[in-house]
Image (cartoon, rainbow, N blue to C red; front, side, top):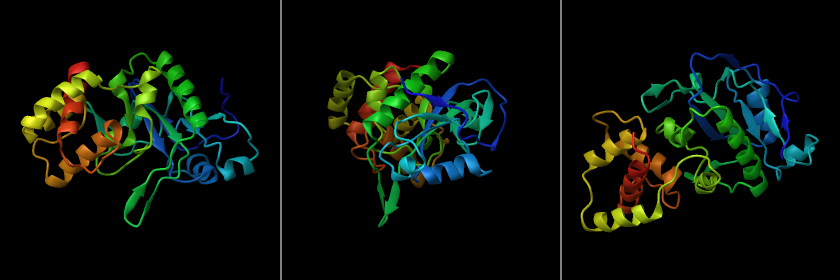
Amino acid sequence: MYTIDSTTYRSKAFNQRKGEVRFLLLHYTAVNFNGSINALAKGDAVSAHYLVPDPLDASYRKAGFDEVRLFQLVDEPQRAWHAGVSAWAGHSGLNDTAIGIELVNQAAVRNGQFVFPAYPAQQIAALTQLCQEILQRYPAISPTAVLAHSDVSIGRKSDPGAAFPWQALHQAGIGAWYEEARKVHYQAIFAQQMPELAQVLDRLRQYGYSVPEQPDDAFVRGVLRAFQLHFRPADYSGRLDSETAAILYALVERYPV
């Protein structure tokens, strides 16, 4: 069991919730532990309910820690400031209704390309424990309401990134995933005839993505990229292909509205 430390670091960037907890949002910090604490606990602009450190981060060890612990920065009944402009399944401003977890991970853009470092196994084990406990406390959080920041902030965010192990979390009872047999079924169909883009966008809306009625090309690429980061991270180019469409159709089938 990993210790939840609710005293060492506390954020001052929070206010009162305006709604029931319905969502669990996962993020990366894009900086090391020291930078994460400076932003989330010492600053006054952003915060999260929890921070999960990277045990291999030198700044974490320099801070005096030699084991992974979970840092609670904001109490769950309070409204932390982590989601920003955000929407999912007809809800907007998700800070009101979400618990936010930040993972220390130094993702970066280098030479115009995203670099997504792997998450250490111990960090994911600690996150898994935390998420399972949160889901027990908030049964209203459905599998399709365990989300990436990139899912709810189309075109603005990429976290927790292509290296995040969503399928492993699903196998631990956290979040949604598609059934492989249904994906194979749909991919065989779409290899012969792709669905119309309008049909794909409609299913993205059904699943929960906030897609306007007449999105421009940049938005379409952005929402497909967000979907791929979550469910097909081997290729998150934002290009519609038979595998992306098949995964989407399999998900909507498994998790009907």
